[in-house]
Image 1 (spheres, rainbow, N blue to C red):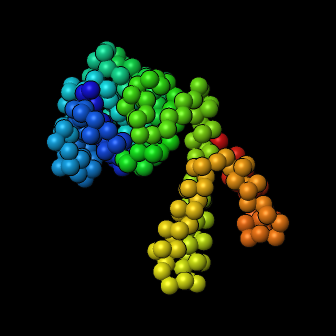
Image 2 (tube, rainbow, N blue to C red):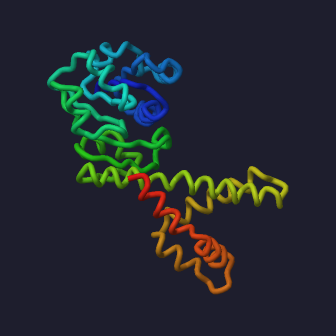
Length: 240
């Protein structure tokens, strides 16, 4: 497949790394020189071009632009009717992106995480599920959504990743003050959280961690009494 990338920032670069070994011919824009040069130096099938050169060389194009700059960047380009566009722009709906790339069609919007470079990450998307699965489904979990409203809700809820990471880091800092190997302490907590949540539902894990008087239940009750659940729901509501 001939794939182009306009706006080759960190997320778009990670997406390219995740599929670069699949035999595609990939052309990335020179706009983000650091990421573009790193990709071209790492993969023989990745080349660099100006934005119009990316469009001319591609059948499927990833948009990794900021939504506020996209109209100016895309308005200067000439697309073809046979091209399919996958947008990574969180600040613009699929229909809004589609209006910017005519006569090409924006067929899918997806929100990759940095882990897509290695695989094993969730991918929330709306639109052409078959195309997204063809490109990214072999190594990642695809979560298709039906409406822009569903995608907006997922975008809000995914923000839980940051406070969870902060909580793990804070616990690792506390543990590091009590043990000799601080890096090992953080590695233990990261493995603890990811392995247990990947193997069962949250409800099942909470039930398993509800031994009366146990460490997990006592800390959870302490956090609940401090208003953790209410603060989380209020924070999510504030994002909508």
